[in-house]
Image 1 (cartoon, one colour):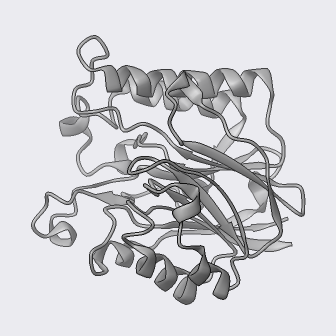
Image 2 (cartoon, rainbow, N blue to C red):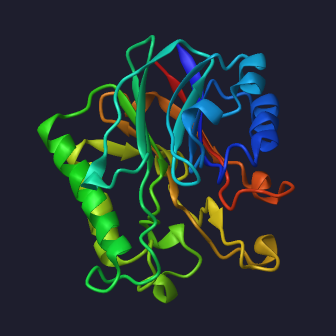
Length: 262
């Protein structure tokens, strides 16, 4: 079975329902993983998605904050949800496709503005979330699995617009990158996007603060698609749909795609 998957921090699925429908209509991924849905599950506007063939959904939601959902054309059942770092946030949902592949959809905490857990509780929560992810994968090694989402870390020097300037900025600090890499190692996860696009600057997020985000191009690659070692070679055709950042009233994230032949 071949299927294309996309991941996108939508920054409110109800506010940007039209953008989700545009993506589903024009790009037609088989599976779409959304983060920061900012909606209780029962208020996610599913009718339009179902009309386009996305009749399967697993989700965790909460009013106004966080929230994750997986929409699929392919039959899918829920495969669990974890509350890493015991935050009580809707930040993870897993779905299992009919071919046995499990998709984990994560929205890792952003971590606030100060990269010091002693003065910034949010930064500590981010590190604790990643530590819990690492420990969970050490305890139960994932197989035939894909992990996607807004992981809120740009790990490589060419995942940010200026490595030296951002070394002390949350999302690119050495301690975050270390935690990020520890999670990857613990689960035998492999970066699908960079396997396909191994060199060059690559971003999936551009701040709303920029007057002209496209011209300034001060981006970061915060959104990721990983695969476990047993299926990593089945992945191909990775891309970032940069144009979506320029749609009307956009999310500050662009969708990231990959195709799997499994």
